[in-house]
Image 1 (cartoon, one colour):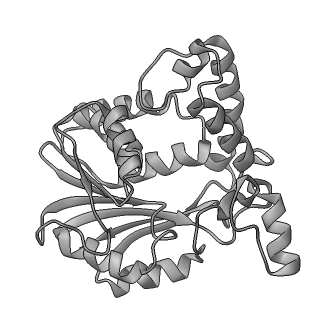
Image 2: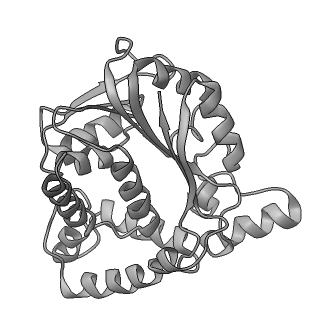
Length: 279
């Protein structure tokens, strides 16, 4: 792909990420999409697509992609269809441990914040390997058990002092709806065992606002309950490239300024583990 095309994709990605208020999500998304090395005509599968955010981002890059997403949650898929609003994006109800596609159907796979939810992550990774074409790329992220103190102080203290954590609900923080968190070496071992070759492995988001996870969850609840003023609601819709209100721009400027520390300071750990793997 030409340098001009790459600049075009980057500009569209920057624009699409403008409305993402969760700095950890924004950093994951940027790393995932850049790792895919996308070109016109690529067939991309998102495993565990949820409400379709990554598919929405991919659909706004300005290149011709064949996009598919699979999830076992029918309500999440209905939300994805509503948010993406593009019938060309194929949304499939199915189990990630039995992906309903033929072998070597895709040349790019996204699996972000998924393996910590599934019963058998080895089976899911082997299925991802099966449906990926030789030479294809998988971009994967998952939760790091060594997450920063400020991301989730309550569970950090519970883990380090009492070997426990809050399992569900608002105060569950990073553990909410997750069966497990991982060490980076564990994830690398699982991915290699499935047959992949790892090209890149790193932590993402070492520096964050205090109690960031709770702030993000609270704002998300307000957003989806539509309790925010319409102008702010539109400004914070991460599925659309809407113009931001002044209040939201100021808030995002502060958040992004803090997040910039992740670009200039060394990182020995982070909220997320990011891996680029090749078949």
